[in-house]
Length: 71
Image (cartoon, rainbow, N blue to C red; front, side):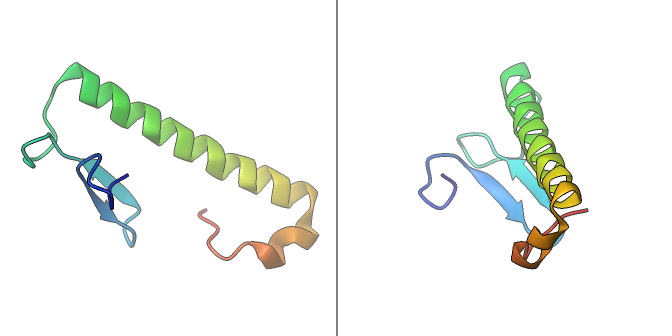
């Protein structure tokens, strides 16, 4: 969505940070809606990461397929 300019954000893959910007491109506002959205995205990413870790604990043979595990 970011690469298609449907949402405005700064992606820092090295630091593992996504900062959402307002429609005018300024830094993240303090609006409740944007803060809620950021929190929900963070929760989804955290839950997905935990799911991957749980699967790999139960099935360590799959570790060889994980090329970007975040711990």
